[in-house]
Length: 197
Image (cartoon, rainbow, N blue to C red; front, side, top):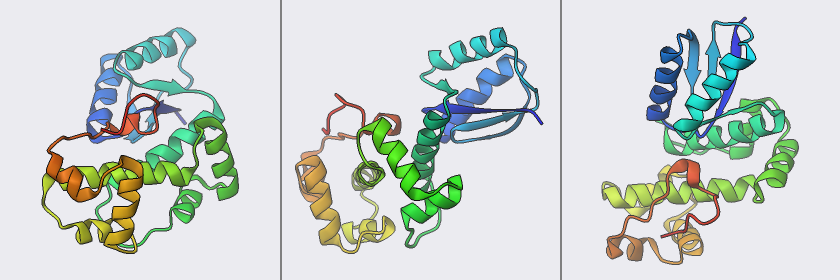
């Protein structure tokens, strides 16, 4: 059967490599690893071993998640980050349906748990992640604003611009022209004190 671990702040491919290195250093055999989750071959790690793992992960900015609601919240975040930042396909996605399918839980329950623990709605978190992706693509200069709007499921360039200005305080053009990066790391989106720019 093995042990399933949920790991907080594991939001990119480099995070997967870092966690995998920790597990290998400890001699743990990985069955499967993905954003936010690890499946080990070992059954029931002893508490001292689990504490050692937790300490090694925390030293790199990760954290083991034991609480069921915290696991749900992290799964929502990882799912949305994966969908917004790492998907290869294009097209319209209804985020509520995606999360319901992914987690096999009703969306009203997911929404309630997320809002109670994070202080914002899933929709607000999704918007913050999308704005970070817009900042990234603007800084690369590869696509026009209309292409970015289409790739992120905005109904129009005007809708994207309006939401961008509401979140950052400036238009996408002003953001591009100011020459400052102003991007957040994905695990810092929705954290107080990280600032917009």
